[in-house]
Length: 260
Image 1 (cartoon, one colour):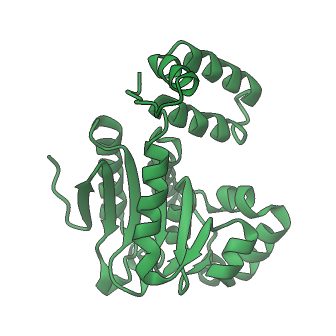
Image 2 (tube, helix red, strand yellow; image 1 turned 180 degrees about the vertical axis):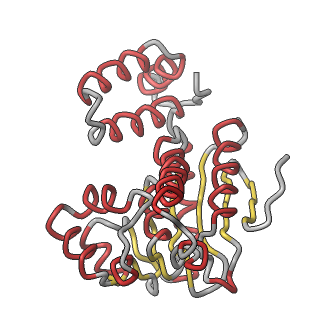
């Protein structure tokens, strides 16, 4: 099993909690941390014992307060492209994962941290959380998918404003914009994420994964989302979970899904 220098992993009752553990750096994403996130996500894909994922940050101040600026200052035009593409690939693994991934945003989610949160399927924020893409203050733009996912979540006009001003928004503002799903007190953050995942985990796993695939297809210019949905619907109808779910409904009992 892989060992991690910058992440803490804890599996309990099917939920894998991935904690970015660089509290002294406000959990800033350096290159090694992004690589470790990729490795951790590969475990999520491969490990049948993992049914859902929470991603959060260590300490009381930050979810992830951006990228490691010291590393960014060393980038050239060529290495910057590779840097961006590697991060996009890693965050794409989160977005495409067929198991639910929730960001537990416990503080600052800025730059790469906001991009990490947006790659997750849902975001639950503590009352003290702050979201933002302040890259223009450094003469940069987001490189890990921020221009794309922020626009998808909050709309073109507001995304333009936030990306060009570099302004932060509060948790409540994020909720109003659709950037956060819930805002809760800090002590309720992880319990709420667990509650949501437990509800999802009680549903048919194959269907949940295909919901993720179908929603993602809305934003894939190379896919016909309606055809993706029809194909996924057909796959569900060929599954044992479909038989179990419909029989359980008719028999007025709780379904026992196996993910097949």
